[in-house]
Structure formats: C-alpha cells, structure tokens
Image (cartoon, rainbow, N blue to C red; front, top):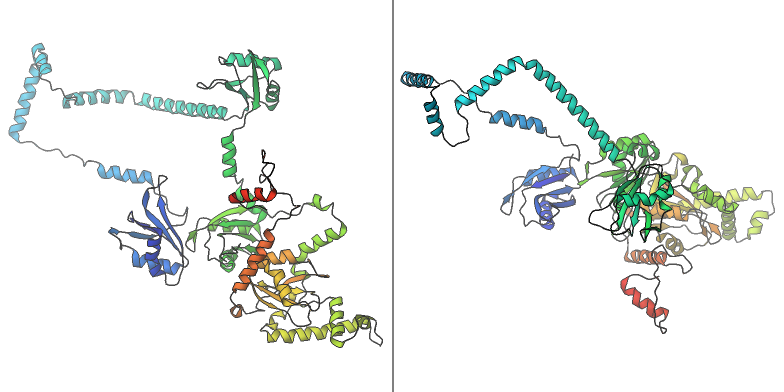
Length: 625
C-alpha cells in the first residue's frame, strides 16, 4: 500500500511546519517521515507538496480525512502519490484526436429556401449570365468589389472544380510524387545522420596560444608544415578572440607531432602548443559518473546501495522488505553517533546476484515508509591487495587470514576456553600452581585434568549466566545451524581477573553498549550493543586483536540469548564515554602524514613568530591537528 500523498492547491503562505501540524493529527503514533513543498528554480511556490507516512494505514486515514478540506481559504486535493515510473502515461495523440472530434462542426444540412427567394436567385443568375461577357459590367463589379481579403463563394467553387478536374487525371502521378518525396526524406535523414556522425568523430585537439594578431588558418597550416603531417588539420579560429586557435587531428600520433612545435616562432611570436582538455565534460563526468551497464554491475556484485531512506528505519525493516526476493548475506545501515538514527542510506547484499537484480527492478522508485526509494547498483567490496600482502611476514599474513575468517560461523565454538585459560582458572580455584596442574603426580594426565577443569568451569559459567537473565536454551543445538544475534557478541579467551570496566572501555569506542556480563573467574563475556552496525564494526576491529597477553576470540551469540526488552536505556555516562572515545580516535599522530591538499606554506613571517601564535591565528578558520 502507498505511504506517500500529494497535496494540491495549497495556499502560497503554507510552510512545511504548518503542513506537518495539519497532517500529524491523523497520524496517531505513526511518524511523518517526509514533508516536501515544490518550488521552481526561481523560488516560486508551485502550490503542491508531498507528505510521507511511516505506515500505509495513517496515509489512507489522512487521505480520507483531509481530502477536500480547506487550508486557509484554499480547498485542497489530497491524492495517493504513484510510484516513480509506474503512473500510466497519457496518450497525447489520442487526447488531441478526441478534442478535434469534439470541436468539429456538425455536418451542415441543406436548408430549403422559400419559393419566392429561390425565384429571385434564379433571376439574378440569369442577369449575371447575360452580362457575363460585357466589359462595362465587369468593370462595374471590380469598382464595387469590397476590400476584404476573403474570397467569394463562386471563386472558391471555381477553384474546387478546377482541382477536382485535375485530381481525377493525376491521381496516379500524385501517388508517385508522394513515394518520391518519402524516398527523398529518407535520403535526407540518412545524410543528416551521416553528418551528425561525422561531427561526433573524436578529434585529438591542441590549443595554440600567443598567436600573432592577424594570424589566419593559412598561417597555422604553414606553421605545422615543418612536422610533415599526413592528414588534414581541422582548424578553428574564434572570431572575437585574438591570439588563440584550435587545431584538431585524426590520430594521436599526429597530435604528438603538433605538440613538438610548442614554443616555436610564428612571425616573431613564440607560440604555445598545448593539449586541449574539455573541462566542462570532465566536470560532468565527475558530478554524474556513468553507471555502465547497471544490470552487469549488479550481476557481478549482488550488492545494492539504497538512499533517501527514512531516519527511523531499522535493519529489521530492510530485511523484511528484501528477504522476499532471496537470501541475504548482509544488511548494513550506518547509524549517526550523535542522533542515534540512520543516516538515510544503506547497503544490501544478496547471496545470489539474480535476486539483487529482481529487487532492483521491482523496488527502485517505489515509496517506502513515506519516501521514494532510490536504488543504485553497488560495487563489490574491495579485497585486500595480494601484491601488498606479499611483502608481509608469515605472522602478519596469518593474522590477516584469521581476521578474514573471523566472521565465518564454522570457526565458532560457543563457550570455547583455551588450554592456558583453563589451567589458570583451575590453579586459581584450588590454590595450586599452574605447574602442578600441568605436571602433577597421579594416574591422570594433563589433558584429562584440563578437560575436567573445563567442564566444571563451563558449568559454573552457565549457572552464573542464568542468574543474570541469560537464556541458555539459545546455546542448545548444532552451533552451525543456530541463528546468530546481530547486537550481542560473545568475547572469549579473556585473561583471568580482568575487570568488567576494562572490557566495556575496549568496546565502547565502537558505539553505545547495553549490558556487559562477565562471570567471576571466567574467560568468557557477553557484550551487547544498541545498534547492529556498531556491533559489526566492533567485531571487525577487535577480532583476533591483542588484549594484554592474549588475543580476543569473538563470535556473535545465538539469537535470543539476551532479552532486548530488559536492556537498560543508554545513560549519560555511556554517551560521555562514547564521545571521549570518539575524541581519542580523532587525535592525529604527529608522525602521520597529512591528507593531500590540507597543508599550507606560509611565507614572509615575522622573525618573532612562534608555533603557538601561528596556531592561534589559523585556528579561527578551522581545526588544527
């Protein structure tokens, strides 16, 4: 159902806030996602606008409630806004034909005159026929003729009879003439097409500058004779501009020969010969990059870029919208760190590219949650350059490989504990040294002791998690077939005795945290994020990263392990810690190279100027590292 309405015949004094207030009364809890008033390029209001609702029910109710009502003194019309490209096109030709048929005069019926009038007309005709050849009578008619440019009825009838007599004899000739005209038209079209193709041929153009004041085409041709050009030159000299000309060559080789004449002398002037670049075309290419073969791009990547999305949209909404076309591998909806809402764009990746193509053709230009959905083919993600990896050491290559495979579910083992962590926990619990645990006397080997210790630790961890409201049933079943949460991360292989605050600070850099649960004397923790995109960022950034003397082993926890309704709202301390973490990330290393086009070279300084005064002077115009 449609979620977008068009409102027509609005008063000139209407504003977006007034229109929002008018429609918000019918929304009843459903958010208005978009309000747009349309203006001409000159800023003149076009007297209509669009209103978008998050749900279709509110849009329908607003249509029924406000259609035909008055906005000020104007009676407005509210209609459902059709999807882009789906509205039926008006048949203009048919409309014109109908109009002409309506405007046609009805066929004239022959009206019978009164017998007396008929007799009078016959008498007049007889008199005219009698004196038709009389010279004086013809002169009398000419003198008393009206000055109007209208033809008399008799003259029209004579012309019609004249043409009718000709048409009967020359009908075949007319058919031949029409065929000849059609052939001529076709020939002219072919010539025009050939001319346009000839004009569109790409020339390799050079620009000549500092020409003599009276330089003409013949002088320029003579100038290029020294390089023995084999093809003709296309020369253009601007009329109202002196000292400049353009020369076009059919091949790049000829153009390079012409460029060798740079700074050569023409009638006492040193002429510059430079390669000409059409800047206007370059700007158009930069502003509007061509998407070559949209279907081919989607078939290669299976990835879509969505924009003009509602700011209240969630990843779950996008999954519901796109999963009907096929299985999804990723839905990425970036979140603004300040407003905690979506940025209005997202990426959707399908497992099979043909599903992405069908979603593109079906949903592009449709209204979704009150906004027109704009879908662009997404390019595939850039993989790591193999040439760069060749110079890395074996350990660095192994670390990169582990980071890439971190998101693969086949590598996940829920509640996994490393052997070193198990040995530390057992030695701490029974007050023995780690050496005695591994090399202790008795019939049991070290492997058996570690296995028994891991079993006991896992049991203690489960009991603690149950007390914290963690659903252990979510861990049951085949780990490979479990549905994974998008906001809860299972952090494993932690050092013994690490405080919860240290883990929270480590993950808070990536976004707002909900609950962080760490059982006592345990090497596994649960970290909950408010947004899925921030959880993915933390996962990518911290997987297999070093923490104290160990490395982080991360996996997404099974879905339903934590009840989202029990999640506490983000506190002010959380927001302030997140802001400080963001500030730490923004700190620039002094040894790091600055970005291009961000450095200024300042000359003519006073000898008493120091770095602090110079910094204070430039801080007025922007941030300074």
